[in-house]
Image: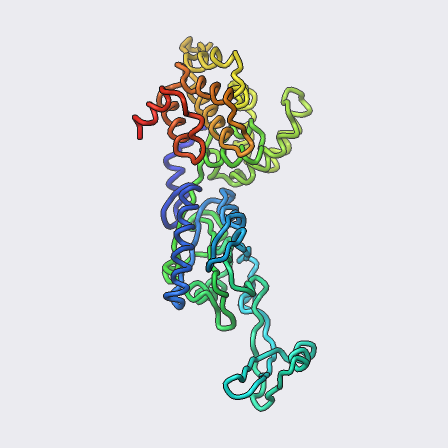
Length: 430
C-alpha cells in the first residue's frame, strides 16, 4: 500500500511512555504492578503509585484491564472470583465535585461512656439522622455542624480486591488532572479514601499527535508507572479467532498488520465491528451483497482500508487454507501448498511469484484456532496438524516459528508430541 511501516511505528507511538510490549507482556506487567501497589498499601500508604497504559485507540487497553474481573484472586487469605473493576470515564468529569462527591451538612452523634464511647459525624438529612437516633445514638449539638462530602458512586464501599479504571485519563481537563494528583499519590482525596485492596490503573492515548488529549507534565507523569501497548496482528488474530469473527477479516489483518492503526477511522475496534457484520454475508459474489458490505465498511473504515480489504477478498482470501481443513486432513492441501511455495507465473513478467505471505497467514490462523478452548485435540487432528507442519512446502523459518509458539503456549505441547522431527526441531531452538 506504499506505507513505510518502520516510520509508522515511530510516529504512532510518539507521546507514549514506558516499556513497549504486547498483550502478553502487559498482563505480566499489570500483575507485578498490582503486587507492588498492595505492598505499598501496607508499608508506605502515603506514597502510592498508579499505572498508566498508553496506546492507540481500539487496541484493547481497557478490555485487558476489564478482563481482570474474571481472573481469580486471593486477597488477605480469601478467594475472590475476580477483581472488582470500576470503570471511571474521566472525560465526563466537568468539575472537582465529580471527584470529591456532593457536600452534606453533618452533626456529631455518640453512644457509650468512657473507653467504650463511640462517635461519628453523620448527615443531617432527617431520615438518616432519625435512623441513628432510633439505634440509640445521641446528637451532640454543642459541636455544631460540619460540611462533609459523600464519596462518589465509583468509590468502593467495602475492602477487597478492586481496580479503579480511570479510562481515557488524558481526555479530561487540566483542572481535573491537577485535582486528581493527590488521588494518584495517596489513593484518596481531602474528602474520602479508597478502602484497602484498591489499585488505580489509567489508560491514555498518545500525546504529541492528532488526539484531543491534555498534556501531562512531569509532576503527574512521575506519579505513575507506564506501559505502552503495541498493536500486534498475532495478538489480534488470537483474540478474533477466540471471539469467532469472520475468518476472511482475520486473514486480512494477519496479512496487512500495517493497516490496523495510524488512520482516522480504521483501528482494531472498527475492524472488529466490520468483521462481526461480515459474518452475515457468507459470499461476496452477488452484486447486491457486495454493495451492502461496501456501504457498511465505509461507515466504519477509511476509504483506503475499504479498497484494500475488497481487493484482498476478491484476489487472495480464497488462497488461505482454513484451519479446519488442515485438521481434517483434506487431500487437496498438499497440492495447494506446493503452488503457494513454488509460485505461479505472472502473466506480465513471466516470472513465478511465491505466496509466502499467504502461507504465513494460514499458519497464524492455524495456531490461533488450535488455541481455542473448544477445539478438541483428537489423535487424528494432531496427526493431520503434524503432517501439515512437516510438509516440505512449509518454509523452515515459518515452521520453526510455529513450533516454538506451540511449545511455549501453556497446554499446547500435545500438538507436537510423538513426532521426532518436531520435538528435535524444538529442542534445537531451545
